[in-house]
Length: 254
Image 1: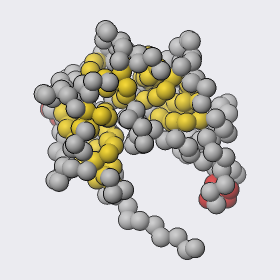
Image 2: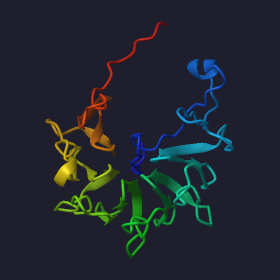
Image 3: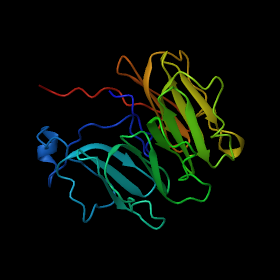
Image 4: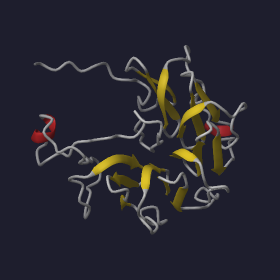
């Protein structure tokens, strides 16, 4: 797993390197026979986008989706009323993507970040110097960038403290963003969470003990997820829809 992680609205953890595409009836995907690098989508029907091959990462936003291709370009589809699915030119050289509620972020190979879509709070205006980034995370109306030196840069809406990075701002290896909160994964395997102020505090910033052994993080609307080095998932925060009830392993017959 690379150190370039994205926070995705529905949310996946990290960059999905390959995902399978479901054929009509889903039988091929169920047998694990989908082409490597294809995308499987569910929910509202995907129209007009070829998802059959060549993808290395995906991101799901509020009403839009992003796919990163092996050639460094981004394919975007879904709701585009704020321009969140209109990838700026030149659409080349990207190595990571992240989708927020109505905005999108792309990380370039040169360490710069490109933002587009809804910009009500400056969430697509990357602060200068726009260099040295190795990770991105798009939240509700805020954004996070992880620097190569292990520090986090945050910009956009700060109504709940979600862009007030914790001190010391060092030693981070991944970032995640929810609607009104932010997450940072430390090199020691611990998770730091901030934001969550005011009306929207549902415990999504209260990392459960033991706060050790994490290797990836993701933030949802009012909940958070952490992937442990033993392959288990820890979830916390709002649970009105069972979003923090991690399912038990599914055992399949040989």
